[in-house]
Image (tube, rainbow, N blue to C red; front, top):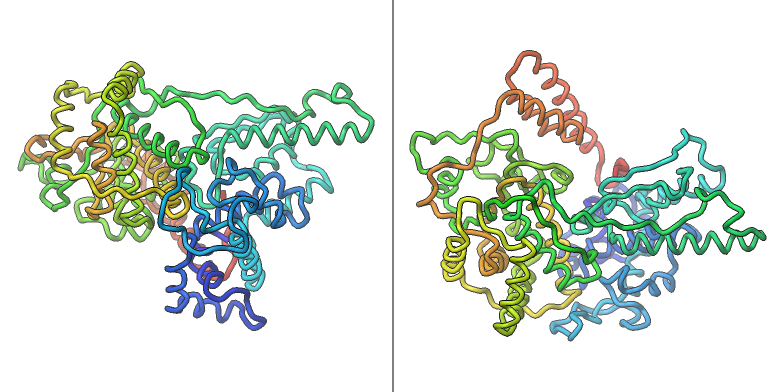
Length: 568
């Protein structure tokens, strides 16, 4: 059960039809979920599918506590008692409304929360989810995780000896999945995790390192109680068998990206900490080793401006040719089909596909236009700016001085600080501030996911970030926010002598294509190999093409009711 299948098929049935009838099954499912009546009920639902999916996957079924419960899931009371810091999206049952509620409310409390939707309603939806999932014979990742955990507890681990385990992108794992590593590792303290909570964009996963250390502490306490019940002390056990709380080390120096990009990315993190303080770990801002160009914003999305941006104003360079180290990032596969002709020759990935990869230049296409968040949700950013603008002059000056001293406010290598300041002042006048929207934590909860998605996209770049978006109202709050903070610049065609598009050698294309193959991005790898016109590359092209065809066939075979492949 992937999120795509959950949102497209099960969610309309959970919202509009309730529990399945005895005769509801695979044959009638495809017709039911697409009915106009159910789709209208989904549109008016008081809660978003992505938020409920995350509560199910990360907490009701994916928490460490759930593994030790009957059936691998929390009871209604256990779910309702989870601390607000761990699961902040919905009110606890002892302080929110019970029995479900209506919409998210229209106002904003002093804490930025809404009591309109509580965990009781979420648990009702979870029960409907399980019923519909069972009616079609499907399963989800947490079902598989609990089955593996149960088998390990009953029979032990019989695979190759694992003395140490290293996990990258740990923010993509639930607590239950991380506990599987503990079960199979000989040394319970020889696990090494790396990750970034601001890049928690995997659907269904809510992760913080603070929660991870809490989980290890609780497991250690539980282990000591079990030893005491057997008349044993911790000193009686090998040190490697005792679960201890891991030490958390922050890496604040970014070796991929320069300060021009990191300034904007860090400001997005600041927004997350302000609006959703329990959704990310509060850490020091990243600092790069060198300066670089600020992200470029296209406020005029005409074909002429895009061509000048890519090719430059010199008519002798009119052919657009992208390099192996440049990428266009989009929301989903469908967005790839809507690319302007000027961008269609570039490597194109979704933000999910690009996670873990890096490129010299990133072109972010229609991030706001294709966003599930409406323009009112994005205007919450303007409210944040308005609050910061109301600071006293002394406070503002002190804040700017601290930013300068810590290296967060950087200018382009090719521009002086004065040039950047003048450009920002002009940009501020050219983009009028949108009307602020009062913040409500539940009604605007999608903004949490959207800001993390934007942060992930921007930090794929080593050199340049260009944001091209055709929805003026949705893009305006963020564009205005970055410009008045002097963390971005507006593209000016009059200064574009040299375009951003760059060519690459066949060897560079071959290396990039092999890298994409390792990431199982077979279709994009096919394009990369095709650009690498060198001796012997045709075998690589055929291999990539075969993998791409097989992958597409596998997705096609996964009808709307068949269990998808389990992949992390």
